[in-house]
Length: 74
Image (cartoon, rainbow, N blue to C red):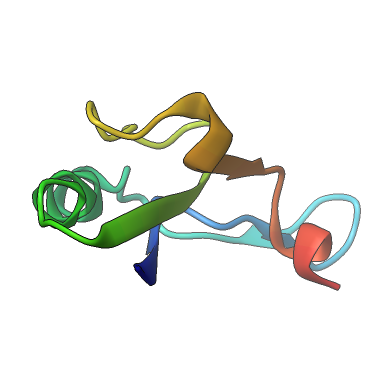
């Protein structure tokens, strides 16, 4: 079985208590991509996104990974 990690949506990186860097996209295209991959035989798709992202319809909660921002990766 092949495993695929799809990431989508904004990632907030706080520079200090006031400033942050992010993008304004919500991950709709990547959610659709994850749905397409999830229907392929022999594929296990994991989706990594923020709370504000669009979530793929076909991904189970066990394979949906939500982060709070850039510092979750550190």
